[in-house]
Figure 1: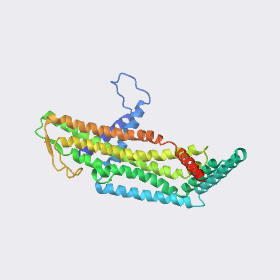
Figure 2: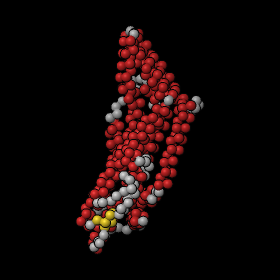
Figure 3: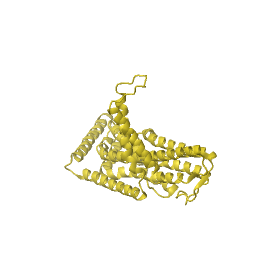
Figure 4: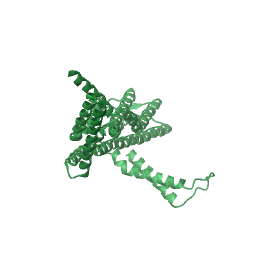
Length: 363
């Protein structure tokens, strides 16, 4: 209820400021001149914030049943995405299918031509010829099992990200940790408050409510960003697979692969951030005497703490703010880590060279 009132007040304030800006009311007491477009920029920002608060506010009140429904929607989305990719790769009349296989055939012919030229000028180079053959069959295999290949990579990210939360709380509900934080913080109350201490408690309640709401919003948006990004990478990736054939075009394949891995890493970092936030908050609350049903169940004891311990509640608010900042920074961190993946084609090249040497030695 407090969070609902806060959202209504914030949205109303933003809309009022927007309307005042539209009506042309100036501020006569401002001494410094304002930029010409500054007012318009502030009006747009206020309207955007109000719009986001109104549109995204239902997420803060999402019940566990609705959270499960959201997971079901994601499963249906993944199934529909798989059907689309498999269908388009099997539709011989589709331009994507035609372009992908024509590019594969063209690059294959060029690969054969390069190896023939090498044979003419340098003689028989068994290692180079065998490497070309291995690359040909690897690319052909990826073309035929593209959906399984991308689904396996995404499945690794989903499994690792869920592994953090499942070990901590026993489930993989994307909304569980944010909802648990709200319940856990509600188990702390202050007894025998003075008039001024009541204001402090209200400040902490506002801070908890707003930051928990922001944490749930940014986590939800970031996780949807990761899933949407994976879907985009999967849809466009089928046209990049043929570029694995030739050394001159493998950079295009490597760029697409890093793009895909970036969203996988983002998904892992999001769940890890929420897990670290939950562990930190639980440590602070348990030091105050809060007990839970199970490791991360509902609070079983409501604790009355002295006003001298208010600073510990500020620690909780600070941890939540840091969690929000880390979720927002996960995009940069994921990009940095994914850029360190290197080139998959280079790794495959090392493997093919090693395999060709072993095969030739066996002869």
